[in-house]
Image (cartoon, rainbow, N blue to C red; front, side, top):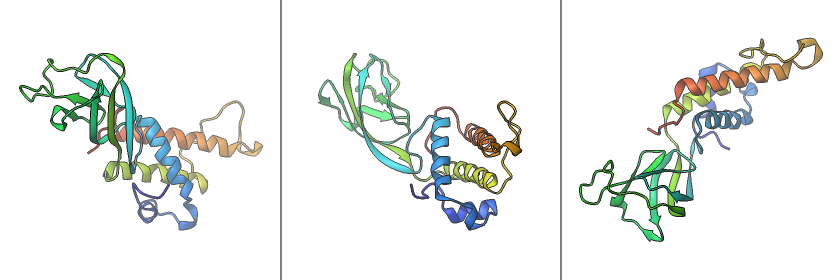
Length: 194
């Protein structure tokens, strides 16, 4: 994956690291940790997704790959809805009442059914300063690990110590824990695109 959410040069400037201390794989690991901790997909990129979802008998249904950047189409029981009939709130597609135009009116619902709702949408985010900052902070933790200044080397299993060759594993656990803390501090459980 390319450096999309933040540039490598920006990470170097923020961390004060040398270029030789920053590996491209750190970016990929940071994005994966961030996506996992925040329960979102496609951070730093936009991807077209089509979900077949069970109709719930409610006015809103969750998509499988939030955050929703935009919705291309929604079909219920084989009938494609007009784009004025739905909205998205980054995690859900919400039906809009056809009379009042109110997305929160309860008179309009997705018909109950098995995989009867087809939503095509763009998932992901490209430009959000929080994403870039989170990725940069997590990459900085990996840089610290590489140069021997890992975030929390106190975490260990059993009698691991630096002399028995398991110090790198212990440092990685500390870095991962710190990275998850960064993600959870900057974002709610279901991250909202801005």
